Each structure stands twice: as structure tokens, then as C-alpha cells.
Image (cartoon, rainbow, N blue to C red):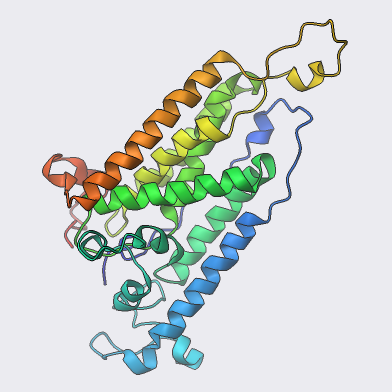
Length: 322
């Protein structure tokens, strides 16, 4: 079995139920109805069921690792726990259905795997952890900013996570929505920073969010968890937040109802526009450079001798090999 999120498993995350509204000085902004995030959740569940149907453990299990788990599910039964402890399909099934595999992306011209891997999960535990996180984080963001912006952040962050993962980890397959989820967390952080003037209790809001992000990134240094996907998704989402999640400065919406000869505040502050331009340039440069290096077959570990510690730190209890 390949690595967790690099084979797809990921440890259940810490509580991501961060609510920025408790620190926000509200205006009369429109509240959206969240439908895209629930649709993403349903899509991930459906894809997992399809993966289990294709896996067909009773027919394809070699018996090397033991018997199928939950045989009463028929062809939806899980691989032996020794092979996949997350109650899911085999690595070969995930690979067949579009898991991220460096060799096939670079030499097999299968770049679509950078996207399809986001919709696959290694097991019920992996799926449950990611979908609960998506519900807690994504629905609140979609209610505040709408499905278009949140959808763009989710998809581009997932792509950014896949690119960085493939540049550093090239010996295993990778599946999971964690890159996209970390992108939403990154966007929440940049949204707080770019809309700093309209928040009350700024320090509390920033500290709360940083602690949540730090705990989740710390989980990524455990073995079999692809922290490069987390980091790549977070960085992409962080930059996208400056671009897509700008709020009008406090008092602007109310000022529109004042007499015409009254001085009206500008909708956004100069620093918001500066952050938008810088983030746009960095995002375009980062994604373009990453794709070019990836399809040239680069392995960034050769240029960074310590970077592998970002994804796994060896201890007396575990090693960080394949």
C-alpha cells in the first residue's frame, strides 16, 4: 500500500470549525446559499462508491494480505486491513481510476491525474476526515463569498497541491482532497489579513486561525501523509484569498445611501489592491513554474536536501521510507 495521502490516507484533522463571523464587524452583505460544497461532498462520496465497485475485493483479492473486510457488502467490501487499514480499495484500483502518479503524469502524458486525484480517497476513514473538514470550512466560506469564488479556490488549490506533491514525492501514488481543503484554510487566513480593518478582536481571530492551520500542518509530518500536497494547496489558497475574497471597507455600503455631496469612501483600501496585484503575479508565476518543472521531470529533492522533512520527520517509532 502506498502512503496515506500519498496513497491516499490522511489522519483525521483537528477541529476546523473556525467561524470568522464572531470577529467580523458586519455590513449589509448578501448571504449566499451554500450548494456547491454539499455537491462536492456528494461527488466525493459517489466517486468512492464507484471505486469500491471497480475494486471488487472478493474477485480481485490475491489473499496475500488476508481476507476482504465486511464481505456482506459484496463487491463493495474492503481490502484486507493489512493492505489498507483505512477500509478502502487497493492501490492498483486507485491508480486505475486516476490517482496522482508522477511517472504517468510526466512520461505517460496523463496530466489529468493532477485533477482526478482530488476526487479519490483511500478509504472510509480518509473520506470521512476530509468531508467533515470540507463541510466545516467550505460551507461558511460559500455563504460569505458565493460558489464561484469558493469553487475556484477549491479547484486551483487542489491543483497547486498536486503539482508540489508530484515535484517532491515521485515513488508513490497520491489521492485525496486535502490540498483543496488546505487551500480553503489558506484563503481564510489571507481574507483575514486583506480585510483586516473590518475585524474586531483582530489578534484573537488571527491567533485562532494560525493555531488551526499549524495543527493541521503538523499532522502532515507523520509518515504516509503527503504534506507537500497540503503545503502546495495552502500556498495557492493563501494567494487566491487576496485575489478573490476582498470585502468592502467598513462603512462603504452605508455611505452609498448618504446624500450625493457627502464624501464617499472608496470601496477598497489601497493596500488591498496592492496585495491583489502581488498575489496574482505570484500565483501565476508559481503555477506556471511548477508545471514547467513537473513536465520537465524535475525532482526538487535534488535541489533541497532538507525539504523531505516537511512531509515526514523520522522518529524512533517510525521511518520515512516508501
